[in-house]
Length: 250
Image (cartoon, rainbow, N blue to C red):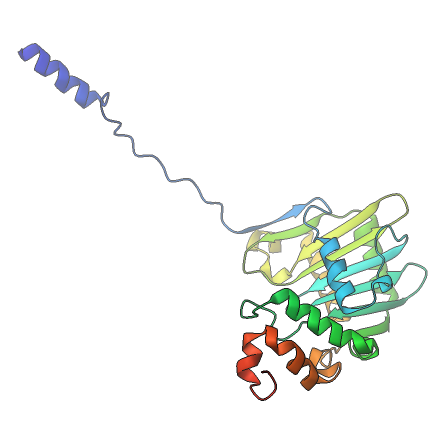
């Protein structure tokens, strides 16, 4: 009997009955930046094209295998699309305007959006006047675009969920697409900022962003047509407008 008790005690102490090992917590990789292959984190260009078509004339932007045209998508709090034929130095820049009330408080998002777009497109000339610009691109900037695309430079991504702002370029040479993507330099981690290659990237990002962000301050939906009519007609799909404009929305 004593032998049995001692045997059971030995088994308990040896850990055969109970696993006394405390598992280690899984390591969490800190927020970081890295160089990646060109095109690995490019945006959904099809969705951007659909957003463009809702705001402008669709045939103004035909970037599916359009040969020898530089396209740039820049985003911060707004989105901009830049296009430049390699045979010219005059770029077209569009701002994808937003509409007040687009959000979770809109009762019927699709109906509201369709109503607003219908009203705005009744006079597209105003949209083009305020949300499209043609500008001469400095030759030095064109050369940098060619350098980053034609040499297939690595893209730079920051794995930081609070990062706002990005630059995306692509170019179709008739045979294949060339891509370059970069997140806002302010989102890069300290190790990336110390990398000897990154200064060239940051300089290009800032120069490209500054050129694209022209004065689009008047590119707002309320400047496109009859504001009161839009609120009156489309406000029935928007709770916010019903509270904000009770005299206009039934």
